[in-house]
Amino acid sequence: MNDSLGRRALAGAAFVLLVIGAAYLGGLVFLFFALAVVALALREFFNLVQVAGYEPYRNLGTVLGLALPSCAFLFGSQALAATSAGVLLACLIATFARRPGRSVADSAVTALGVYYVGFLASHMVLLRESPSAAGLDYGEGFAVVMAAFAAAWCSDTGAYLLGRAFGRHKLWPAVSPGKTWEGAVAGLAGAVGGLALVRWLIGGPIGWPEMAPLGVALGAIGLVGDLVESALKRSVGWKDTGSIMPGHGGALDRFDSFLFVAPAVYYYLIASGYVTGF
Image (cartoon, rainbow, N blue to C red):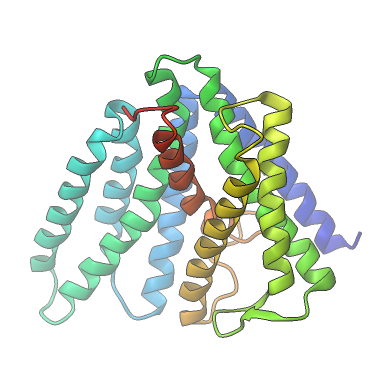
């Protein structure tokens, strides 16, 4: 193992332990973890769009982005609709604070960051809290959070490792030159493996019969999230959005897939009748 891959593995292992610990404890600990992710990812997103020539409302966007998971924790998914309306209203009001000709675009990228990061990340909190709100054991929330994380992480890891080793056919070079079809297929298999690992170790609501189709779907959704972030970085010529984790880039790099996988798992659980929202 070369030094670069070794640092990447060590940083990834430390991060996995941090997430497992926060998710296991749940409550305010996991909420603060989610808020830290949102704050870091929003900072990176606003840095990115600023390079593209926009001037986002950083302070307003950060406050609004942090408000979404906080309201999800305090009041449940029902609060997201009302909070989202408040986000739009605040961004519309803010358009009058900027010079004509730029205010609408600046407000638009601010709102995009709030929804892309804050709204999607709110589902981390909903996954952790909704089983308890449905009358199930509080530990069930840990299982569903870890299922979502494992699907995203194992998909990313499988795509990265096997794509590097066997990738020959480019997936979408205009958006992400390093991704290959071979890596994408490995990512789908990795997502299935991640769900199976969590089911085997700690249980949870995702049964063996639906493991394969759900895993493939989550792997594909995670890939979309990865490509969305790649397109954003590609537009300004960036490789990573930050450097908080050696070999992994920034918070947005680490959570790009999970931001899309978490809502998918949450709404799957609602559709299956496991939770009803709260």
